[in-house]
Figure (cartoon, rainbow, N blue to C red):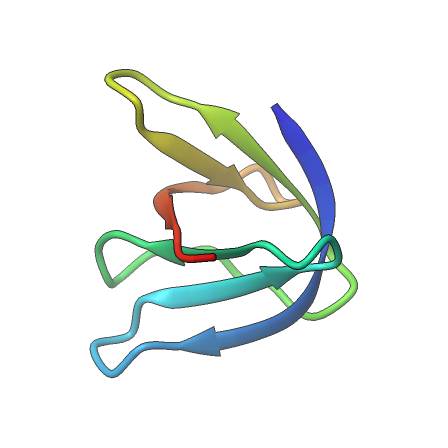
Length: 70
């Protein structure tokens, strides 16, 4: 499990969220249409899922599958 602060938030052309963390890591949603609402400065948690997947959990408890970009 990784806990960090979102330093930048952007989106891909189809609406997938891209989150840059304060430690320099960049994570992107696998599928568009999530209900996660983030802004810079929000704490986020990255958890290990099943079959080598990862899940980003927002402060409001909502989550989405993500992949590490950088």
